[in-house]
Image 1: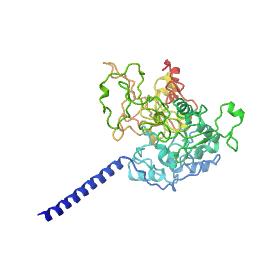
Image 2 (image 1 turned 90 degrees about the vertical axis):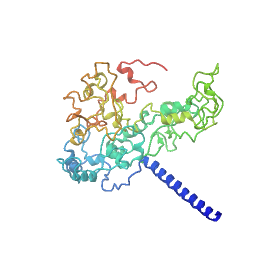
Image 3 (image 1 turned 120 degrees about the vertical axis):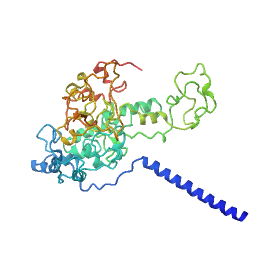
Image 4 (image 1 turned 135 degrees about the vertical axis):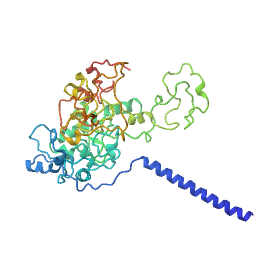
Length: 465
């Protein structure tokens, strides 16, 4: 009996172990599937050299030949209103201009899809971009850093990662200045936050956001620095910075902040380190607060103790005060937050605000990032709630006033509908650069106290903290 029982138990144990292992492997695959894996792409057929400063009309037309077979027409084919600029589509965007499609076919026709996918530069992360939609994705954050430079150039040639290829022949000085600008680097916010919280001891800031073509953190060097990287006394007196370094990650620098104001606390400030998963191990949360302690939420944990996390540095990484800097797209998820990255952050206008005092001539086009482009492949796109996170915008409406008649799509002449359905959100108004930038475009970033607070230009009062 004993001889029979032991092998049986042993076999059962092995079977149970195999089942547990299989479940663990399946769970691991399920978790890994939640994060989209990059698709391997061969960009050799859609690669384009940097755009030239000059070329003939014939050369320009050849680089747009296949593109116009589907896109038919554009607001300004070169993005510039001046006819003196000669650029083909592939000069800026890349792609294969020798592929011709049929604009008469439905956009889901196999022949149309085949031509589109052959001519276009395809993304490594198609689901994240909602491919084949060309609308800006909602809350894309660092997706641009993860994508291939070829696709970044395809969707936005003015992005700083690739602008040298598309625009550098004529605008290299402007590109370099934009990369060093405070709107791109955020040096004021990062420097002030790191000094004031004891992370770095430098009043002359040395942190700034910048990335390489491949999306890696980059160091910025001033062109005014000499061969040895030093600045002259005159430059230092004018406030010139020799270099800006990437922001260190929050877990590799010593926590310099004494007051843990970013940690939860308040009703009781106990001296114990936080317990992971046990917010109230001692029952102290039921006790009243000690008298005479600061009203601000904080803990007793000193620098370099407990979890050893530099909370201010983590907060700088995660801050959305600028939502975000011009290295990335806006969140494109609500009125006021529609924009792209790079030079297009300012110089390509989106519908963000329908108040004429805020948007001037652009107010008539609504607030939801819808387009008025002449390009039929973009103008015909409608908003699909399925597959996207449904968004519902609008202010609180008083009882009896549910329909004010001014909602997007309520008027037949507002140009925001296609066949009675709302146009797709997340597109620029037109394929045009402009220097006539409305305040509503600036409000994408400059909408709070430490960041110029342009709200006062719109009639709002700024209250101090």
